[in-house]
Length: 144
Image 1 (cartoon, one colour):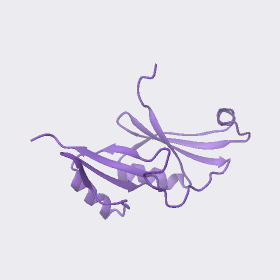
Image 2 (cartoon, rainbow, N blue to C red; image 1 turned 120 degrees about the horizontal axis):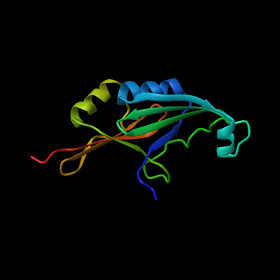
Image 3 (spheres, rainbow, N blue to C red; image 1 turned 90 degrees about the vertical axis):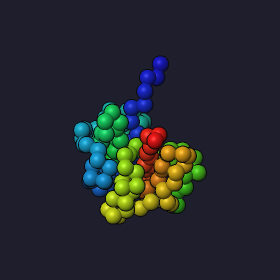
Image 4 (cartoon, rainbow, N blue to C red; image 1 turned 135 degrees about the horizontal axis):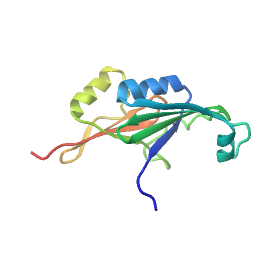
């Protein structure tokens, strides 16, 4: 019945900051920007809901950003860890892993730890997104 994964959604405090991060740092394209009220109120079961939703696309993947005017969002738990329950990161594939890592560092992106060759030819690093969500960059190197 299910055919493919469609998107990942992130609720944000600062929509413009989130758009800029995913557009300027990651390279996603803004393809949708709209506000919803009554349909979302029905969907989430909270009367008076009003939300702005922006879709940021990379190839056939979408990061869906939500900014709720009402109800107001709550801050995440302090010091979230990758071992906490629930959604723990958004994964992106990259080319030129080490060059991309250096460029993100130069642009002030905060990494959780250091880059790792997690298994032969597979390089991974975790970093913070615009709203402190964890993002993963990964390259699977071509065998030589």
